[in-house]
Length: 85
Image (cartoon, rainbow, N blue to C red; front, side):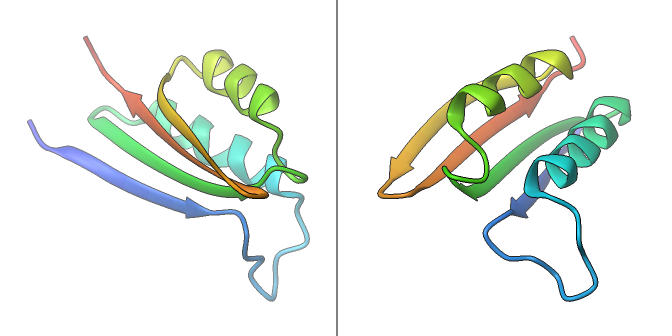
């Protein structure tokens, strides 16, 4: 079975997007949770927009596994996994 890799960069806002980064992340995590295949998700965000505690709670809510969070100055890089086992 293949693993789908999804990268979400919440540091950049698309021109037509007015949603807060947390709203965009919540939408993506819901979609990932509903997928049938395994997935690896990499998230980039500013800590002011997405505090690590909020990220941890959202990941747990959507039934995903937090593999790692790296703090890079005012930014975070998080790696999540969805396993169907």
